[in-house]
Image (cartoon, rainbow, N blue to C red; front, top):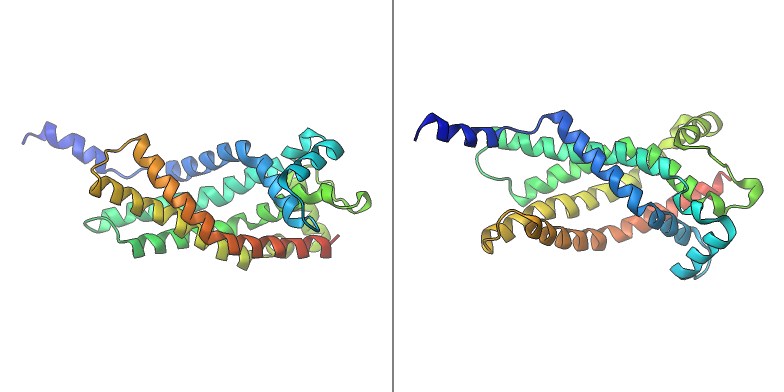
Length: 247
């Protein structure tokens, strides 16, 4: 085999630069937030709503009482959360995989992938908790009586006012619950995605492409939603207590 034949294979083995790994993770998360943020607002309103109410009732109430722009309240907090949490978790996970490939032969086992994903999720959650606190407060502010609303101008105004009015450590309230949820979500999402993608490709002889990514994403998404729900409820309930306690 000539050197020319070997060069392309060597290039494929080169890991993605760390900065690009983190940048791609953050940008993908921020792009997704621009699309799904209204659902985040609706979800948070439903979770702090007293009594039973359907999603259509919540949507109708928000639209009639506060206007359509309210569905994007707290968007800056959502974007900053993705710029911190998602950037760190995906970047760290990809870097750990690159480190494994450089040091060891063969692909990591599911246990190793789970450890990588859990670690990346915990680190990302700690970094992203302040933005998460601001996000919950900004998306539920309209739920409070007018005299109790904080009316943060943007996420940075929220950071400054929370630190000044309630001490800086308030930005990390609920960190344990947030980290616990992040570990479960990332193990369920990232490790399961990597493992399922490998199994589909090897057992069903499916080539790399949109179909393979879609199939692996569907399975990991279902597992993630099922496993994270109890932690998500606990995290939201804790956020509710903190919101009304400081109102």
